[in-house]
Length: 78
Image (cartoon, rainbow, N blue to C red; front, side):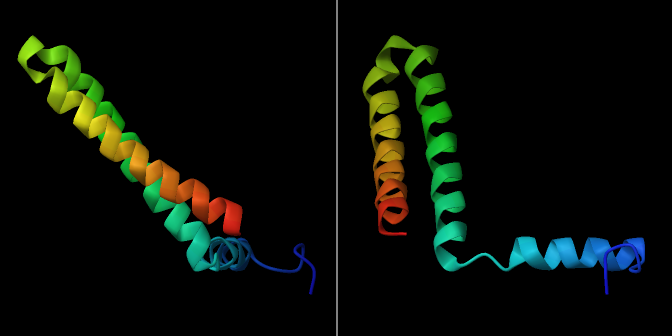
């Protein structure tokens, strides 16, 4: 059956099924990348919020970078 013969709802359901069928490595990469982005933004905001928080900001960015390194390792092993 071609896409022209399917209803719009059936086509949307097929697209959703294809998107959700990603393997665990793809999902892990997305989650780790989102955690990295959140920690990095929080770290930069913390760093520039007050001079007393420079170390805390750098620690947050460093933790975020460790998540990014794990994500890169998963990408290499893929």
